[in-house]
Image (tube, rainbow, N blue to C red; front, side, top):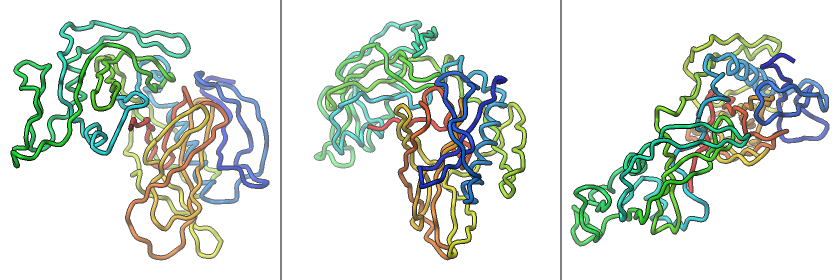
Length: 365
């Protein structure tokens, strides 16, 4: 099999006597374009929405392979999650969660002054990458979003820092400020991070937070050593005819992606209902073969179920929903779904089947 070619499969959760794909696939974790042997067979799907998703997903997968920057996927440091990572087991309450999400911190420790120079990223396959690092002060500046509104939060570890006691609100001197998280200690270490090359141990500044009883890590890799996600062409294929071949992508181009909040309706013959394809709003977790995510839909959606299209190097995620014809409210509703892939997601590109976006794991406490 030539590099970049692989058998593919589009899937929905198992239903009696039905599979969406003609071929199953054995998946390689890190090898792009790994060859696969068929594991089962089935008829062409009858649901137009499933057919449309499969055509769209294959077009996106091919566009990704042909994109000019895709070759860096297995050689560069490309983070696929946020660079601020809370450790497991932190003691969050509503107040400290708000402070974490808003980036409210106060320094109760002196930041290490020397610049660390360089460090190593260690990948699961044994590969290492030497990278430049940022000093602790720069990492704290990326972590800290400033003071809560109307407050002066002391920063003891910075030059010209204030006193250690909490400051009152400027608007109401008798009312304390909203809680900020206190940095009690700072040290250089590593943090597990999802990357385009799988999970990696990445150099990070570890900020021990008094109120949380543990560390919040900020990746210490210098911006010059972080490679941007390669551009992905996302031209919409002709979904009316599943036999139409997906259009070839132009390497290095990146047309505007479809909005991730728009569902794509496809009429079905059953009782005036529509079957719609819902785009991915957020990637929630990746654990081996299990991928959890949220899709953007409406309050009128029924029977929301995940759908995905996978090959040796790319997984395209989405969901299907049934929707009655007629008027529906326009508010956005997020539906939680999960997919059980045929092989580990680690090392494969995850794409949104609606807007064509590359999916990045979000880090929330």
